[in-house]
Picture: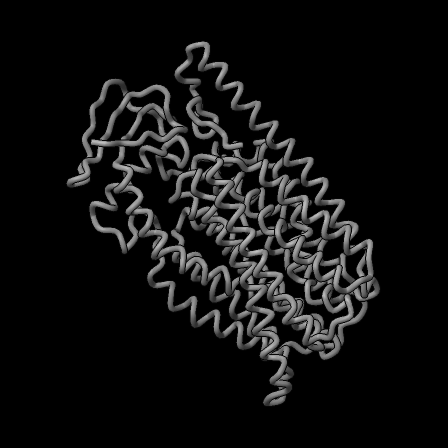
Length: 501
């Protein structure tokens, strides 16, 4: 039979398991004692054609559902920017920078609860946890359509942040439990792709809602929240029954497929973890790993651009001299370009197994675009700059998230380390919400200047992260060259685990 060996797990063979292409039955030949959970000591050969066929089922049944969830999640989050140019601020009596506070304080519960949501997915299963998040975020969105003052709006935004924290990081974690590391960026790109599509669709939908005017005593911006929240609840609710709790028990897999998924988990033990038992040592490893914090600074500094861009793009475009109607529909082609660029870069990052290189490439157009906005008052140049910016802004977030998620193992370490990384990065939302006050309009020089500076800092920390991981790989290679086959460590610290750079 033909088999494939995981390239990250090629040392110290103690167990050989094969899966035949006829009946997928497992056969084991033991030569040395079994390994401790999370440590690579065996090689499992799986028919690559059968494996690809099973993963295509996940692509067919799981990814479309995930796309719908995340699309509507981002749509409900970012509609505040569209509501702003419909008169949201005036109608509920916002003054000074209270709108910026609504954007900023959304991230307080979001940041605090991210780790709890992701750990809950690991502990209780994806279906149950995402159901709770869905009902919570849709209810908060609908309620926003009925607010009458700043404090009511703030309460709704903070509830929205609480429940939306259980969506994007959770899906990133879910993808890493299913796909190989070299195939993960394309799937994680789905999260940021949904963000871009939600921006394009949100602008189109907002433009349509705006033409309604006041209906049944409710202004158009109120209908924006009410309709989007109701649509999210109905569409996502219809998907939840078919969303699997664990990859090995997915309803769309037959018994042979489930057996193969179990063998994949054994084969990938050093990467994904061989047991499901919670251990405090995984928490300690995640909290004490410098990699998490160096990468999170890169994520924090680069995310200011994406949060500011997503929420304030209609405001930025309107500041170039366009009307409210024009500002909404002019966002659509910008997001479309961003979506195409994101998928292209994620594909090549996976293909070449390079993260840092593409992160540095993506940072360049972001800085160039903000410099153009700072340097010229031309509305045409400013609008073109938005197209330049969007070719990099989504890719940075996607590739950083993938880089961290696929270099933290086992699962419980990832379930703690990934949300720590994301929480620190999402603190940028606290900054982004203050960068575009009305007093800085129409060109928002301060916000754009801070964004370009932080993007440059992000590039520096991407390089530092690359140097850190390269040094770890070199240390392992040195031990292997000296004849070592096992360093006694588990997870990503195991000798057979190679960090993707």
